[in-house]
Length: 389
Image (cartoon, rainbow, N blue to C red; front, side, top):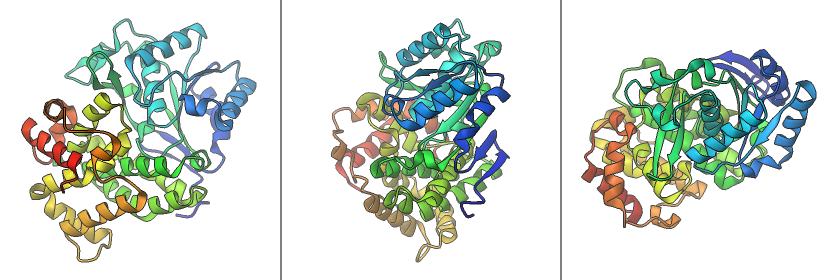
């Protein structure tokens, strides 16, 4: 695919408009969904940047109004969502533009869900049939505009929100949380620093890779995951090396979207561990997955060796096999400047027992190739802290 071919519209799993300059379609996308006074939800780092200010001005000119809310953390909390709901109601907003990285996308989707509910957000945690509690008529439509290439939250039906009192990340789910229109504009990702490009790109890899390794049967997701992994291999180093490379930026946007589409098949131990680590240490989710990746692969080796050998052949790695793939992951992390151990980002082993239990309880653990015990998760985490691969 060349950059000209990237300008296209497609629909899977939702309506997607991709291409350079497609951010200019934002007011029309809002109008298509019946929005005349949307609320842009973004993070504080983006709120004052030209891309957001121009989008805000464009919407205010073309629509009846448009507001801005940016009071969210890198790991959005229930309190952030409550504040966003209050801003949405105060401004009489009729839709949400989730604009930014995973934190803004997750917060935006959660705000659009919660603005019409009379229950606390935790009542909609992705457990059992909690989603049936949602007053669907109270939900607002969402246009998603990702500015990073990692979470793929723009095509997800859930938000990961931190419960600050419990220090736990919870998955809030409803099928209608899937944004109705997504705008993939690679120019919006060009200002992303190399370190964040690397961490978010490795997050995209983790989504595709864990979906690929999941034991559950979903042939469409399986095929998407394989191609998503290949896109990361081919284009992430280029995106990190030259942030203005629009071809690389476009391909990584697609890899990110593919990863979140593929993990309908399930995630695994990387995310089961990253969620509690993020909640306890407020660390970057993509970076956590990147550091954890080889340790989880090694722990899963007995269950995934044949699969990963096939994958290594598709990626055209030398001497295809599990070791070849693991070596590629370790080398890629090194080339991108990803730390080898959790201790290098300030995480020690003082809470590994608690983390092990939290990982065991995390929904992502249920689709790992091996159903690890809490003690086994504790061992994986300890190895990742100390760099023992």
